[in-house]
Length: 178
Image (cartoon, rainbow, N blue to C red):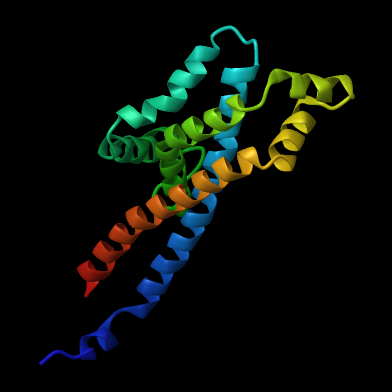
């Protein structure tokens, strides 16, 4: 007969730790990825830097690399390269870095489409009025509703993808110990 008796023997402290880590990653990954994507998009589409196409290439490169390669690369980076400076191996923060790098390609495509909708004259108007580049970026992205939808889409979809990825990891960890 089916019953829920088996759930009483689950290590609930591990489940709670997994849920809290999932929530942290679901909140931080999309937020940091969106902030970096806005910076990348601004450099690629609005700046006059030589070699700005390389920024676009670097931002889209994670889309072409499988997640397993990122996982192994992050493991090697954390355990051999930066271990002496930042002891990140086995922490939540190294997972955060790997997930941000994995989500940046999608986020830059969404922010590119939102930034293309604004004409340069809107930004030039802000500069003429005395605003800094950051001030113009903040005002154009915060006041208009065009980019709010793109930013919200990036946040939601990256959070959902984060939940799915971390959820699989937590399930494997819980059921290994039971």
